[in-house]
Length: 94
Image 1 (spheres, one colour):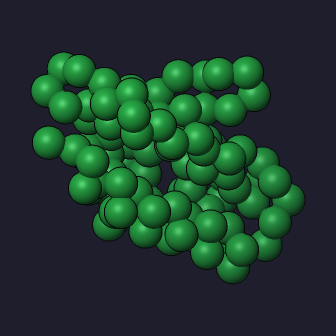
Image 2 (cartoon, rainbow, N blue to C red; image 1 turned 180 degrees about the vertical axis):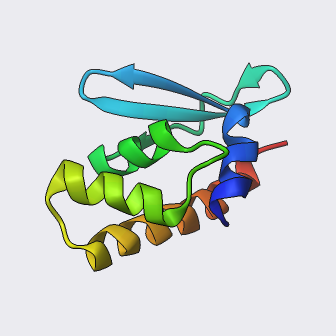
């Protein structure tokens, strides 16, 4: 999955802060599929909250390196892993 695809399907999930975690739930129509809850770690939360039309891997990578004091390679690897995981989660969308 690429960033533009994630941006286009993001509206098919409900995201809520629960304690110190961000939980996302896929929607089926307008109904949340509560049997499929996914929690995001801090890195994934930053990516999720900053996905938008004008985002690129480079801009997200800069955000992660500034936020978490990691190198470019680690930040890019985290972004790509998150996109792969979101690709798997697409199967829960109707």
